[in-house]
Length: 112
Image (tube, rainbow, N blue to C red):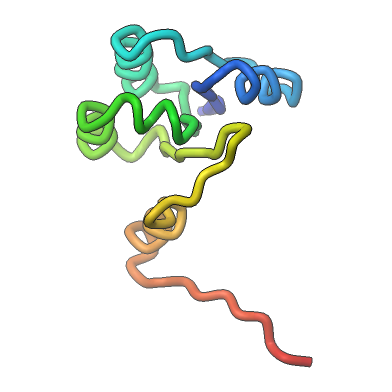
């Protein structure tokens, strides 16, 4: 089954992903409306990767974090920076790899 990439965020990020070819890019409008949209996307079988901007995820708060914890293996959910960037306290991608692989993957550049 082919799965889609979906992005949810503020205007600049959504526009950028749409211009890059992501067919499903949704603009965050209100907390309630975005939570309703995301509930549906988390249940859609055709969604493989759900990208949510950091600011939107923070605004959605604990209800969003609970939805992500309780979902199945698909879609994969990642927070992404918006135009202002962000420095997360923990690296969500690293954490996802650790849970999936069962070990920490360390990449180091060897000295030449």
